[in-house]
Amino acid sequence: MPMSFSPRRFWPSFLLRIALPMAALLLGGCEATLFTGLNATDRRAGIEATHDIVFDARHQLKLDVYRPAHADHAPVVVFFYGGSWTHGERAWYRFVGTALAAHGIVAVIPDYRKYPQVKMDGFMQDGARAVAWAHEHIGSFGGSPGDMFVMGHSAGGQIGALLVTDPSWLAPYGLRPDNLAGFIGLAGCYDFMPIDPGEKDMLDIFGHDQASQARAQPVRHVSGHEPPMLLLQGTADQEVAPSNAISLARTLREHHDAVDLKLYPAVGHITLAFALSRPLRGKAPTLDDTLAFIHAHTSAPSP
Image (cartoon, rainbow, N blue to C red; front, side):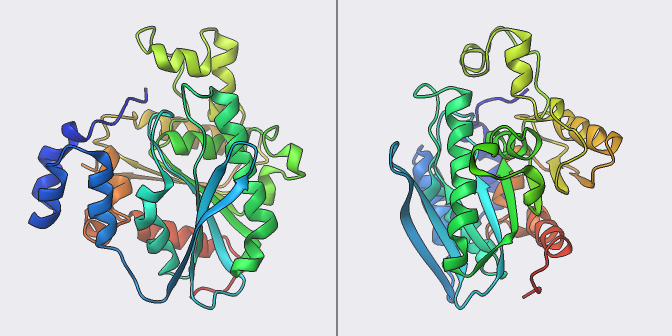
C-alpha cells in the first residue's frame, strides 16, 4: 500500500549517508530545501536544459527537457516523479534529468495536476499529454521518438505503468503502449487494492468501489501487448510494498511480456530514487540498471 513520504522519517538514516553540507540543508525542515541541496551537487558541463515549456496551455502545465549537447537521435525518457499524487515539482528532480543527459539520453520531466485539484482521470490525462508532446516534439531536441521510454517513481510509477498497460490513456493521441520502447518503474504503485478505509485521500482519488479502484491498478490491465519493462524495488521499502513490483512482474510473465525485476536488498523507498544523484549513486545500482535497460531496448547507438 502506498503511503505519504515524510522527509523527517527518512532523515535519520539518510543523514548518515550524505556529506555534512548536505545534511545541514536537510535540517531546515523543507522538502524544497532538500531537493535544492541535492540538485546543487549535480551540475554538469555538456548538458543543455530547457525549462518551463508549456505542453498543456489550458491547464498551464509545463515540462523541462535535459539533453546532452549535440544530441542526435538519442533515446528519450519521460520521467514522472512521485509524491503520493498530492505534491511534488519537476524542478526538484533536476538531478534525474542531468543524470540521464550525462549518459546520452534526452530526459523530459513534466509536472501534472494533483489531488485535491484533480482525481485520477486528471493526472492520468496530464501524463498522457506529456508523453504525446514528447513523441511529437522531442526530435527538435535531438531525441528519437521511436526510442522513447516512460519512467516513474512511486506515484509517478503508477502513472507511467498505467500509461503503458491501459491503452485508453494514449489512444486520443494516436499512440499505443507498444509504440513506446519500454517502461522503467522505481518502487511504483502497481497493485494496491483494496485501499484501506483509513486512507481517505486515496479513496477520494481512486474511488470507494472495487470497479473504480481496479481502473487504477496497472496489474489489472496487462494484456500481453505491453512494451518491455524494468521494475526496480528496494526490499526495505516502507512506503510502497515490494509486493507491487513482484505482482506486476508475475502478471507480465504470465502474458509473455518482457520484464526484468530487480530487488535491491536493504534499499528503501527514497534511496532508490536518490541513488540517481551523484552523492548517493553508490547506495543502489538504479542508474546503471536503468541505462543498461535503455540501451538493450533502443535502436539508437549507445553513447
